[in-house]
Structure formats: structure tokens, C-alpha cells
Length: 455
Ligand code: PLP
Image (tube, rainbow, N blue to C red; front, side):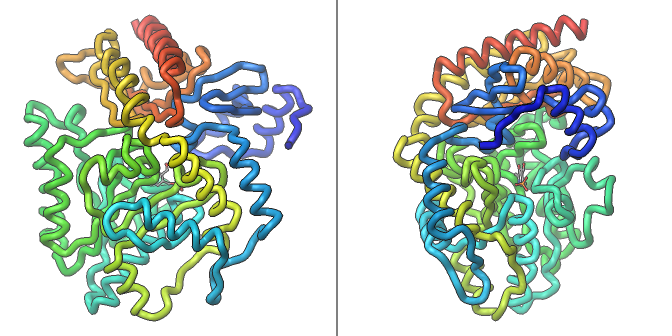
């Protein structure tokens, strides 16, 4: 174990001097110092000042089985002693890679029977971008190259995956999006639906895909990529009319559907995959995060028989990552899936944790700051608003209410994330009813304090 012998201030000073944090205003952070997390167990984090913090974000939407499992430590030790590394290039394979691929094929819906491994969700989506273009070229339709994503969608932070995503603040830096990527609007009724009925709005937003395909030309569009439920964009649950229409349009125009299940996979929505909860039939599925519950970096693209067979029959696909299906990551993903299965954790979400949390979460709508409370399985959001009836936003685009609330959560030893004026949650799937009670108490206290500060 890496022992921490330094006092918090010294760790913060070294952090400020040498560590550049992702998605962070470095100079602002360096002035105040980062919170130092030193240990974690179940749903609880410990920081270097000895605070016990309830992590309602499961790290970054990933620690599905909870922190600090001894079985995972054992699995890691066994695998390192047996085979610490080998690659899967050059016509070789290894036991964890084979076993994990077969296991994923077994639990994935439909005929997603083939696995192309990566080390993260971003990498897997970069793979998908190249893969769908290669697929259509192999089918004799090389002009089908454009991939359509959605504004405010998130698919990762590399050039490819960041381009597929629709985060304009990311595109503004470093030359994204790359060519041959297009975007349509998101199905966010609360924020963008105006006076329309949610069902009509969902349908209209889905039809934007058809309009975009017709505008770009069916012969030029390779795929549509979307999260079944947007996560990083603020846990936006689409109206029920949305996905059936998207599915129809993709089939009609011969456009591959990529479901990015990096957050919604591995039990988060109360079924193994969000595609099952929302009744999608993707040709490709992106997975990562809950695949190993964050115990080791791993991601993958799950491919249908048709997509995989077409790629396999087209000769060499000149693409791959050194650490794809890394034996350690694959062994930990397998152990993670075993734990999810043996402890019936997906059933726990569907039958215990999600119904209990839903009732309390939706009850937050009575709070004077909260205009909307959405939740599917164990991913949820609340929208803070100065005027519930008007579904109004706070003035600052930076999410003043959200920022204050996140700070109040920190002070109350709770991790909730803010996305603009929204607070989002995604707790470990093993959260108990008693922990949900503690979580909601701290959330209400944080909302009360935010409300008081905003007055
Ligand atoms: N896709 C989705 C839906 C995500 O939420 C994320 C990360 O939050 C990614 C892709 C990128 O995954 P990673 O950070 O592992 O590259």
C-alpha cells in the first residue's frame, strides 16, 4: 500500500506544483488546494483530514460494486502472479481476455457477441469512429463516413470521442470537432421544451436525426451515437417517445446505432444495460466504467454479429491499443461481473435501492429550489431554479446555484456533482437503505444552505 506520511498542506502544495487536474481551472484550484482522498470502503471515502464522505457519484459514475473489495485485491494478486502482461496483437490471446469476451457476449443484449477492447470509454469511442467507417467501406459504401452525435452529449475527451460529444466548451479548445462529425439537439424537455407536450417534444427531437440524415445525404451517414440517458450532460432522461423513433430512423436509413453505455451499463439503470431499460437495439455498444467498477482501466466496443463479421471479412483492421484486454484489467472486470452476479446487485438496484431512492429523490421537488427531479435506476438529477413554474435558469451560465450546492455538499461530507444548475448523482449500486437516508439528509441540508446563500 502507498503510505501517506505527509500532512495535507504539503500534499496540496506538491499537487499544486506538479499535478495538472483534468477539467479543472488549475490556478483557481492551486490557490485553495485539492481535497486529498486517502481511502475508501463501500460508499464511503476518507480524506486526509479524517472526514468520512458519502460518495453519491461512485467516483466518476463507475464504482458500481463499491470501494475496497478484498475479492478484487485477491483477483489482482492472482492475475499478476500468473500473467502480469501479454498483448493480443500478432495472433495471440490470453485466458482473461478470452474469458471476459465470452462473458460480455453472454450478458450483453441481442447479438452483441463480439468485443474489441480498449482502456477507457474515450478510446472505445475512438475505435467506434474508425470502425463504422471501415465497416461501410467494407460494404462497398465508402462515402458513408459521417457520425452524428448530440449537443451536450458526452463520449470522452480524445479528439475523436470529444468530437462525437457535443460539449461546446470542449470544442472551443484544441480544434474539435474533427471533420465528418455532425450534431443534433438533445431531448431535454425541461430546459428546451417550452410549451410543448413532452411526448411531442421527444418525437420532434428524434425527427431531427431524420432531418440531419436527409440534409447530409443518407449515402454519407455512417452512424448515430448517443447515451441512452445522458450522464455528464446532466442526467437527462428522454421522453418515452424519443428512442423508438430514433430506432426506426436508424433502421430506415441504414445508419448504425451506437449506444454509449459507459455510464448506463453494468446495472446502473436497474437492468444490466440501459439499452434493456429503454428497449434499444444497438449495432455497437460502448462500455467502460462499471465494467471493472473502476478497479482498473478498461473499456470496450461490443459489436453485433453483422458488424463484427463484416470487419473480420475485410482483412486487417489496422487499429489497437497495447494495453487492450490487459490481463489485470480483464481479470478485475471478470471478478467485478462475478460479484455483480453472485450478490444479485442488479436485482438490488431494481427492487431495493432504486425504488427507495426514487421516492426520496422525487420528494425533493417540494424543496423551494428544486424544479425537477429525474431518476432512472441509480442515476438521477435535480434542477435548481429561481422560478419553478417558468422552468427558469439562474442567470450565470456557470451554474452559480450548482457551484454553491456542490461546495455545501463538500462541507457536509457528501459528493454530488453539479452540471450548471443541476445536481447529479450516481451512487455505488450497493448503497443500502440506511445509507440512502444519510445521503438524502445531507442533500437536503446542502440544498437548504444553498437556498439561504442565494437569497
Ligand atoms: N462515454 C460516456 C457516456 C461517458 O460518460 C464517459 C466518461 O464520463 C466516456 C464515454 C469517456 O470515458 P473515459 O473517461 O473512460 O474515457
